[in-house]
Image 1: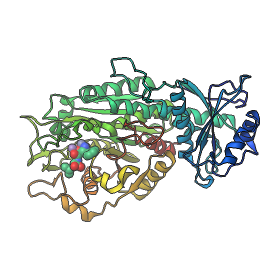
Image 2: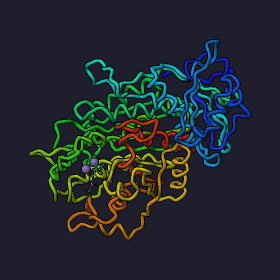
Image 3: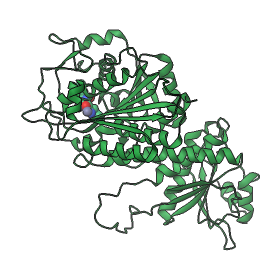
Length: 502
Ligand code: BES
Ligand code: MN
Ligand code: ZN
């Protein structure tokens, strides 16, 4: 997708569609809206006067321009209450513009980026760029036949270019556009990896993709195969992988954008390419969705691509443990005791609690790099769906400042997270009769006990965990999402790293 900031007059810029936002209570008496009203012989004022158009979030009005140049269509998009206007409103607005273009059969459109009190020019251009690029993404690579036209609107045009225009500092607006485009490209890569089924996106494939990404944005990538994992002592990753014919991998991607020797920020993502549950087999209903169990890994690879592309001035390491969790005659069994890279032993009471096992080794590996902070993201527990629904990821950690920074980055990026407690009392649920700890803590507080388990493997690193099981994929309710992989929390990770960079 081509995204650019254009320093042009929106009323004379030649475009098939110009999307313009308006807040609740706006009059067509000033600014761009007044000029559009004048060009359309009072059509905007009339729509406002009838009350058909108010600026509510649901309002959309398509008006037609003349033949003498400038926009052929004007799409007026309600933005809701002026006081509630924020980056997410802008992101959704430009995405709504893209969706309208798709329906109208337009490959290109322009978006007028609204002013937002709490955002600077770079920030609002970034949000608009993200909304447009994310909305245009689609996953078609596995459809063999051509798309068929129908009259229900399910077949739509691919938008290939979007021009952003705005009042303000051109340099900042252009820079923000580039930041948003790179961030969205990273998130769209995550979505593509998520969407690929388990027979395509195997651990080997995910590792190959990480190598390809590293080559394209100049990251140092190292892949550990099973022999190397054994050599290192990462027995927890190997234990999970034992029931599968697919080989496990550990992916390590390094961006050296900071001062040499400066401790890195570390991103870790669960890369379970398919989670059947192992011998503790999952029920069949909805099991196909477990191809998304590598969503954390996909987000880390996507974020690393964006971080490399943006040349962020920080040392950042992305770590993705990847394996497939299957039942077989060689699979891990309930009651088995395994060892880990950290040296701790774990009684595997339930083989379906496998994410925390592969993460245990990856977190220990990360902690040994002496990071300034380490953040992992994982589709770890069904319990987080109950706790927070689809509105926020859970965040838990051993450092309150880090948790607060992540909540902030979530708010800014539109990928929200909310804290759950990580009190020592919960750790009792993980006590084992035979090993140092067991991998499940019973029904109460499932998301918290999972994080407690991880906390045992981070050494003295400042660390936080994002449980993204309810947000990483879903039915795509937002205008810049579709059903399937959402790429969450790629934007949050990129935002957090940029906020920590020099
Ligand atoms: N990948 C699942 C978690 C999950 C569940 C993600 C639903 C998305 C939707 C994870 O490996 C798992 O199976 N967790 C178990 C843990 C339990 C056995 C303690 C769960 O949440 O049921
Ligand atoms: Mn599982
Ligand atoms: Zn899993």
